Amino acid sequence: MIIDKINMKRCLLGCNFLIIASACSVNLKEKGQMADEEQHEKPNIIVIYADDVGLGDISAYGANLIKTPNIDMLAEGGIRFTSAYATSAMCTPSRYSLLTGIYAFRLEGAGILSAEDPLLIEPGSVTLPGVLRENGYRTAVIGKWHLGLGATSGGVDWNGIIKPGPLEVGFDESFLLPVTNDRVPTVYIDGHRVYNLSPEDDPLLVRYPEEGHHEFQEEQFGRDSRAAYEPLVGDLPTGLSHPELLIYGADEQHSGTIVNGISRIGHMDGGQSAWWDDEEMTFVFAEKAEDFIYHNQDDPFFLFLSMHQNHVPRLPNPKFAGSSGVGLRGDCVVELDWIVGEIMRILKETGLEENTLVIFTSDNGPVLFDGYDDGALENHNDHDPNGGFRGGKYIAFEGGTRMPTIAYWPSIIEPGMVSDALISQVDFLATFTSLAGGKLPDDIHFDSEDMLPVLLGKSNKGREQVVQQSSDGLGIRKGKWKYIEPATRSAWAYNRHNLGEPNPMHINPLNSNEYLFDLESDPGEINNLAGDHPGQLKELRELLDSVRYLF
Image (cartoon, rainbow, N blue to C red; front, side, top):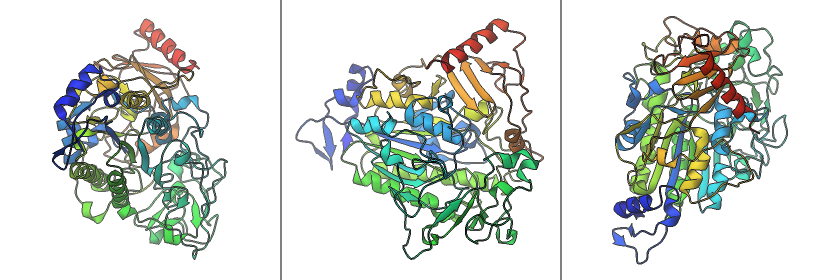
């Protein structure tokens, strides 16, 4: 069904851009025939969420060696943001904030999770998919989850019912990469069960070393002697016991069970019928997304398409091998661009493009080496994945959280717009609730702000400030000023970035002091002005504390 463009724009103005679909009555077209009656139609919402993709990885933001024509098409036909942020420089906290509208630093344990960590979002709490479902949407998550599964620590029974999970926090359908593609178990979760798990298989068992996630990285970038040379479950080859089986080498943290020639974090055994094929993963997600869109084209839907590119391990489909000028890492971005094109093709074929808001963004900044010797350092060819900003994944600098962000809705958003308005992914909850004609409960405080006019290009007045979480502690930006609190910095995060020569991502570690940057004159965050502007320093320090201790 195709929404009438002129009527929709008139309705949008009359509704002050806040409750578009529920307040507008429009004539609809289906198969070229006018509908016999007027009816209300809410826009579909698709969020395509990249992983470890920086501003400089997208050609619409200036990449030269990596070409992303499908993402560029969204930018050319919509609005491209230059001051849009993930809430964290790490993946789990960013996802938590996007789905709950609450900064993840408020929740104890909202770090980088393993497959043995329970569901981070409390079932029954207010979530983005839950609010949209209450307002008539069919909701689905397809792709990377990384928000925990089950009710208790120590993992779940991978051979039985796996819950609570996405279906308990507002999603009607889910097809998951349960953690990250560098961790066991290397299986998909379809609803409450492992996808394609055969009862003829040995039971699927999963076990992680006792060392914490980053303890492997503290000594010699993860090459300490505490790693388990023998598998913790079963007897399958590991990266340490059988390095000759690897496509490329890995540090000890990533030297667990070998799957598809790549060793992973952790150990597993059994369930081989369900193991994924890394090279086919993007095609699997594309097929699941297509099925969801086709089956729900007559009603409003929300699709959270959470991709794995270009998180390690990087093993793109052979179709994309050599498609960029920066090796496997760039090839994965090209593969990501392909699925964006597939989603747009499906929307066109179903006649849904005019009435679908498509958001493209990423969970945190880029990293070249992240545990695997995949050539990312050797083949970067002077490519700058941060687009001129400093830092990257894990780090408090702008490169860790300032994300490529594009909004596309051809019947509403004027093409070719660029906005420097300050927005955050934590705002998606309030913004999409407004778009759906819903209302958030008054008795719960959310960090989310309604940015619908900004997202649609009708206003350039973004939020007053945005908090940035990282392994370095918290930072806050207000206007041109950026403040980073004093904290104990994470040596492992800088170890990840300060490898190899030449390397465009070399980052001098922060010391434990507080920092103040003028992003207008110093977007690379080189000059610490904390001693030169004590009044501004005090203002941002107090502003951060006021947000931190708000509730």
